[in-house]
Length: 525
Image 1 (cartoon, rainbow, N blue to C red):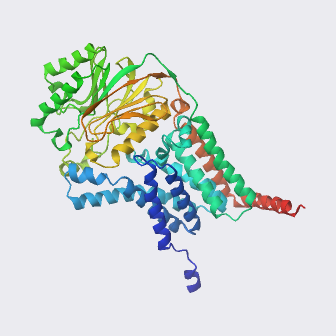
Image 2: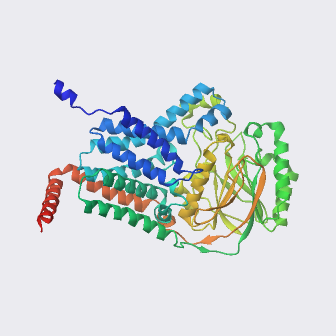
């Protein structure tokens, strides 16, 4: 019994520390740093270390350590939202942030558990099971409990990596899977004892994926549609702690009125809830002035503001004023505990703890037509919504341009604004559409169809970003099919691995045949 106990697999502290550091290192691949090879290296280290574990529990611990390093380094800005702007005491905000990061880390931990529990030959486990499990768990994170796809590993490859070329075909989750596959191949090359020829074939597969992605970056998926449009994106830089104070509302209205009046652009875009009053409470003269400015420029002013009323349903919306009939878009994908309270009977007390104004918005209709404004057909999305590519494509291919309005003052001077902008870059790549971002404190930017940021305003400055945009028509493969092809591929791979697990003898005979053929080749003079 003692010998059996001593033979049980254990997880060493150095291995866990290496996983933790590798997870933190991966954050350097995302904006604003942009060292896109780092996530590849990080996953390669993680997968190689996972291969050294000999039990599901040890694999779980390795994945959990990586996930804690990754999410604590990457989304610690949650603490700023809770403590500085949500009214939580610092210790409670720190605890909530740690628990949130731990919850997210359970998904990389699940990958480690699955690869340790699923008894497959080491090569199948590393090159097939781990990348498949990684991609699938990221996809699950994108919809579970309404979804938190922030820092899906595929975002790190936009816009400079060769893998960005695959985004119009397979979306961010497909890019995540390909990155995990390459990381697994590199880990296998570094750790296998198989023949040099096999390692060369694995290296060739890595090169082929990179070259293929680079070639795809040159493919033109959509075509220009109509004449270019002049735009102005307004960044008011209104401090979050004064945004909803009633005595400050008039000053905020005046700031944006002056900025809009100074622009000759055909399409002027203001941020999310830029006007801190319900639409029905706007002064008549103010509403008329916005409409006059839009008509004067031959276009429209598009602004974020709440619509409806506290006595009934109210929405986080954008509303157009100007040449076209007034049009509205109501936000569909709301942030739990920030914009609505799920299961109010259980969680209603959170409203009192967080002190967030307008924290119970109603959802807009899932199917909303693009806004025909400023000479373009605008697919509007509000703040967090552009994190969900499968939802953005609902308005395509009808829309000619994407517009995101956000208020990221909640996250202070952190990584969050840059990470959010990188998700907008991915949406532009996936859809073959230019993306306009109008934010309160940054990152306000114009992004082209290749996901490149053409122009932007500095964070925490007031200003107007002027430029010209081109509308586009047509569909990328991702617009046509969304995540379906990737999910179908994963289903086929999963079914194959499941059969290999259920019928290990058949798999074993196949492996024996391969080994016999390899031995015969070695015996040849």
